[in-house]
Image 1 (spheres, rainbow, N blue to C red):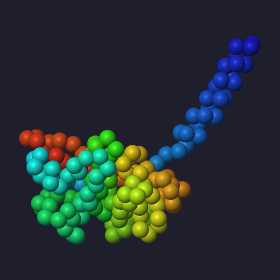
Image 2 (image 1 turned 30 degrees about the vertical axis):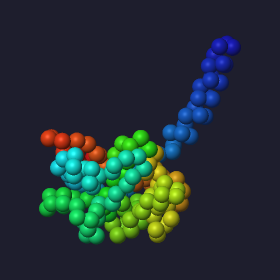
Image 3 (image 1 turned 90 degrees about the vertical axis):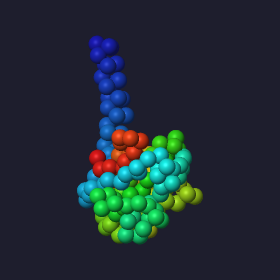
Image 4 (image 1 turned 120 degrees about the vertical axis):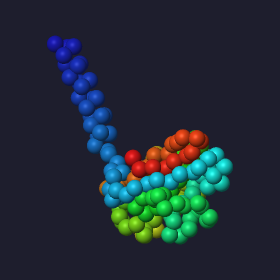
Length: 167
């Protein structure tokens, strides 16, 4: 009987700890789906236009010619609001849609603030952790509602090519 009572207390304590954590979910699919296909033909192109090391970032917005002189082709796509390419604190490349998921407008783009190391929406003021927590919201309406930045994949292709693509 004592063992059963102890087991029930243990289960109740576990549920009290795990269930609230399970309820905290980040919605990183709120931004309308849009194709992403950015290629870097080789290491030299990556070195020039990619992210060279930890805590570096670059915006890909063809209509604003960002980055300057990037060799965009007709088949390249840059998501809903553009692409934010970063190198996380370990130097690993990560990519996100620039559109704030609270605003859901391709013209309202987050900007990296290196003082806070967050991406910040200029309209709603939401902050997103792009260097450690995969675009998760840290404050503002996005944190209140659990809206994270849409994530894209970064990987290698044939012949030393680098790619940023939709999931």
